Image (cartoon, rainbow, N blue to C red; front, side, top):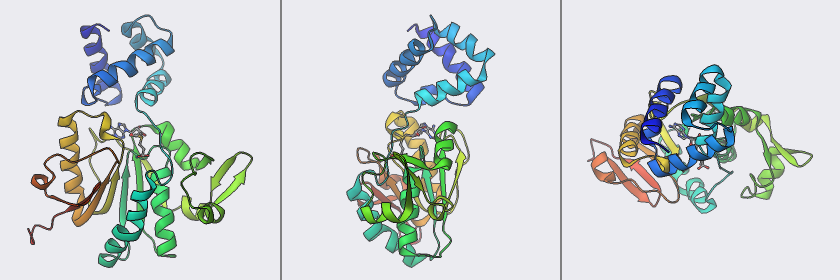
Length: 263
Ligand SMILES: C[S@@+](CC[C@H](N)C(=O)[O-])C[C@H]1O[C@@H](n2cnc3c(N)ncnc32)[C@H](O)[C@@H]1O
């Protein structure tokens, strides 16, 4: 892939879709881009770009392809057990209704997992759970809330029974949980962040970001959380210089925003 061609393509995608490919790890992004190009059947990035200019659906397909959407309910089950047993009860002691933001939520499995836990703990309470992602096709699936057996393999059988209805080889999430989550398109690298959150989940999203982009996003999350609020990150991630950013490590993958008065 020619450097000049790549840089021009990057600029064009930034202008048209607001996505800076330069914030993603270069080798990974180039590999993904090469795969997208082969899949499209165009001979070069120039040709691919010209086709996208004519047909906005192609640009949307491209964005969907380069942002990777693998997810499942209760991903890293033991961390979700900790969320349910320790983190959420602690947060609920401080505030009876929580504001939860799942950033990079893919097809909704993550925010719906939290919704299920909260419904079990506090039936009847109206929590605010927001799922955001850059990929509008993933969000369409999230709103539909129909999943495969594989998506729900980590869900406790009694919860599958209670919150899903079987439709052939698929499972439809019941409205009681579906209605607890609102979804919207949001680019972590460009858009304004939610405020006053009790809990933010951002898992397996930033593994594709450069260190500089990650630092910017962590700063943004810090500002989004209320003091004492918790950030839950993915099972292969860490926050570099967490303390300097104003986070205390609770246990691996959970960070609490330090209360400035107590600090
Ligand atoms: C591997 S999925 C992770 C889903 C879920 N958080 C989990 O851990 O199972 C990564 C998600 O991040 C989203 N994503 C990638 N870049 C993003 C950005 N700049 N802003 C918001 N979401 C982004 C992708 O569209 C994708 O749905």
